[in-house]
Length: 295
Image 1 (cartoon, rainbow, N blue to C red):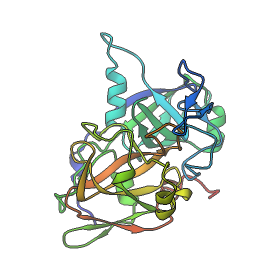
Image 2: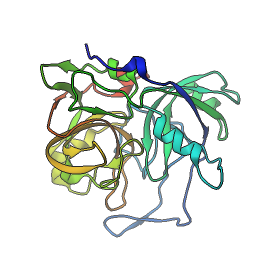
Image 3: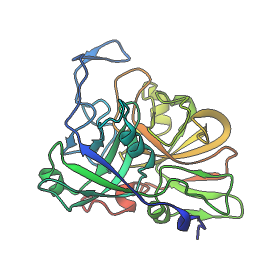
């Protein structure tokens, strides 16, 4: 049993609105191969893509599973509310619809997408059909400050106590065995590298080297998969460090844009390798939290 400081954590409200799909001024995205393409992207209610589905097999670019929320209300011209939503919400937190036809329905936070600064929430299929852009979602943010009392060399972020308990983590005297679906070398991580913190956002697995995709079996990567980034330290940002291991969750689909690909939100990190990833094909949030009965 993992001992934590859960009893000292604050549970606090943050609110976002369901977004419509977003698109920039440019119609085309120019791919890493130089070819212009048009694809669905971030935002919106994604009616046929949820955690548990492929992160790769879509005509898509950074598509977010389930429901994308943000809070664009400003105070003195600043997005304090969206900053709080993106910093304090944690994977596994309860999300409650507080307006519209779906009022009272509950979902689960399944990730954060940096750059665009969205929080991603999974709801049952029938709830997705009731939601509309503009509906408000209350997240009971709980998990920031979570610590492992017996493993000071492992730092947690973006993970709720409930989700941490649900993962089948094995303990030893000085390291943890954490189930993951894939291991990914830090060398192929792209957009988001060098960020000054890992309490918001994600960074992307580049898919442009076919040999590495095959070598690490990334062609079957799914949204919601837990993955281990090898030689990556996320203690105070995202850096390459030999021997470090970071665990994250896949939060958006593949991209054609150079330096981009399926995004990963950090859940835990060890700068000195005190996390031992163990391959388990069921290490996906949809299975761990039983979010879907159809997979």
